[in-house]
Length: 119
Image (cartoon, one colour):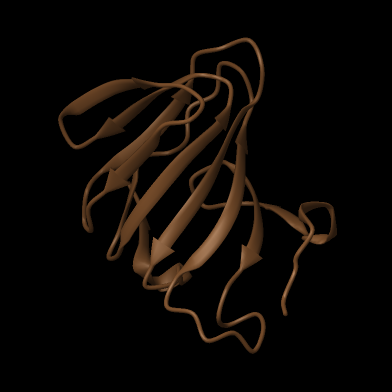
């Protein structure tokens, strides 16, 4: 059994300017996974950098509120919502609230730096 605690995962600044903690990644442990799972934080008023991945991604909003941009579409996002981001889509998210925007990122197949392009 593998159980990871968020507080035990090292925080780092991702290429898109969000604070990330990778919870599960097949390259970081002996896990039979196709996907990676990370916890992201974006402070009030900040916007992640526009970027695209070669792979699909899902954001699951935990706390705060924001504005999700995928290609030419924009939608308000709030806790309890999941956002599907198709491969090769230009994406970014803006924190429009007064508290940290916290969300889970699921990338399938698992995220690798060479699969991400910051625009």
